[in-house]
Image 1 (cartoon, rainbow, N blue to C red):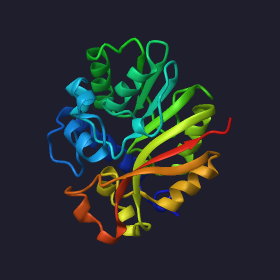
Image 2: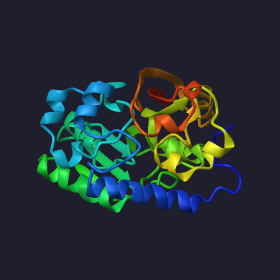
Image 3: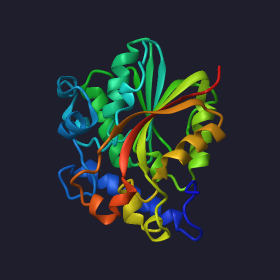
Length: 263
């Protein structure tokens, strides 16, 4: 089972590598990385509305590095409280903030200082600073109260967690009864080899910690979520250097996944 990193895996090294990678994206999104970035990629590969993305500040869209489209999984309604789970530079966060309107709130949590700074800059540039809040935190210990949010959106993050069970339990904790998880993440056709799962670079590229589809569904149910289902699939790694580092029969892909907390 791939819920946890391999025995003996240096979790602190992994976290440092992930933080360093995404701080580099924050500093210069045009740099050399194992994954796609930016608004053009989001529209062409993941189904985002290109015209809508063009209205957002480039400080957020240029640094987008997701693997799916959590905003499109289900409607985000006016007045709701949305958590963007490891928000990065905040492209999804800003889209959610527009949808919740002035009566709602959009909260971004991220452990990467550079990305938090860019998310705050983007929120102010978009005129959404009054309804957007950016917090420092990790996905194993979210800085939010129990049952305080209506929707958790997450894009390319669960795979980065050394222990997925802990992360999903935290998501369930902060969701209100009836709340929704709208998650985009990476899945593989079969579990990766121990060598691949022990490679910090592949983890930081969102592949080393990816789950097989059945395990994503199983861990979601184990955490207490219901109605779990894949709603869309994306060829998020086509043409990247990460794609050439893994076997073709793994069929690495991004997916959109919906589940909810029982009411």
